[in-house]
Image 1: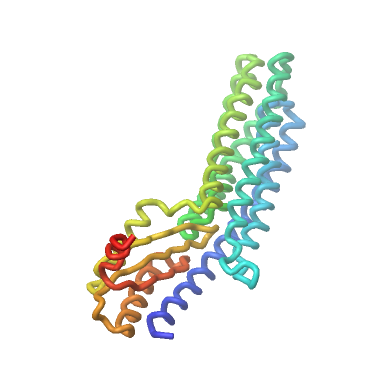
Image 2: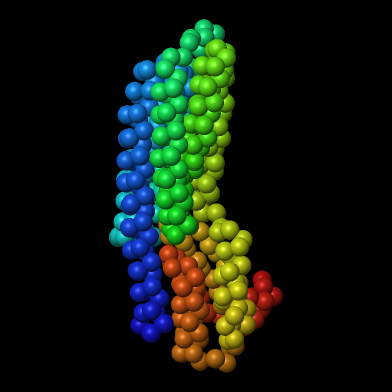
Length: 312
């Protein structure tokens, strides 16, 4: 193993260890926050009878379940490759995200039914001041969690944590909507406002579910990395003076891990040893830019792609 390969392997191992720690902490934090919010929202709903409050309680119940799914999915995704799974277990993350989308959609349907009942037979909201206090507490706690989750996502690119963060960010808006509904109902006695806000919250929950499901499907279908990331790869490869061209760049992601493979073209007169050194150098530079990536580089004599195309 060359010096470049050793350095690249060490950088990859250190990067993976840091990301694994961050991802595990994020899942523990989301489960803890969901548990706390369930307790306080349940008490608030029992005291107020608000269907908007019920909607946010249901959302927190789904949050807790989804966060537990995330916890197990992240653990599975971080499991090292084995004999049966040579590319690792990263796709446990998008599978968990799809499960989240399904649960979120189910909660939205239940909420639509409850809001429809309240529109048909409006009911008064009691102890609205308690409900507002609970919502303010929920907003503060959720904002702290979302801030931490986004910190983790920036450093890990975890789809499961990103989906969880998106859902909790939506919860902040949901909680604000509940506060507005409670204030309007208590001040103006407009009982229809409570279920109407619940319908709006349900629509927003469905939109969140679609965003989560779309990202999960992209990963399960091996969608290419973003154009910006692919351009970074090209720039790094072509910056080496001995690399004359590149082709067959293919990328994908599976949970926190990215996969990059490409062909680099060099002078046909170059020795095999020198070509190997150039390839290792390019790989090390790519690994520094994408520490969580598995990189495969094939070496070709310059112009071979055009010659092959001419033969065909």
